[in-house]
Image (tube, rainbow, N blue to C red; front, side, top):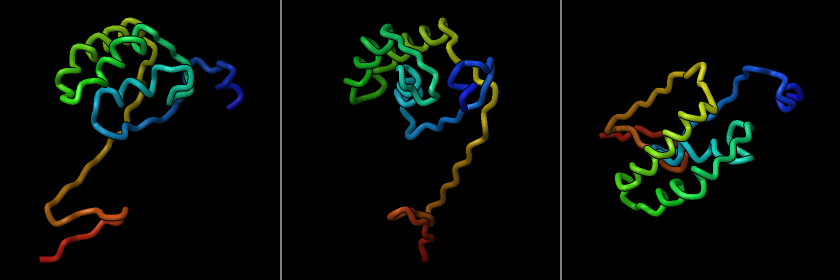
Length: 108
């Protein structure tokens, strides 16, 4: 960990997983001094205007222009280059539900 924190490694692996399917959740964890990957990246171009504006929209389709702007900034900076992406699986069935953190199967 010491070498990573000192920036001695040109490539390293870190993990992150989105909490919920909203574009903000794929951007805001990475644009701050204390971000999700531990790689400081402060961008007032993102955090001063488009990100706060996008959060005012209840209907998330109205936030698309702000996220397009943010994506252009992020792509131009090329701050992170993903080298590997793990597979994620989701299973659903009408007879399966979760309550209080426990999975149960409904009986007919």
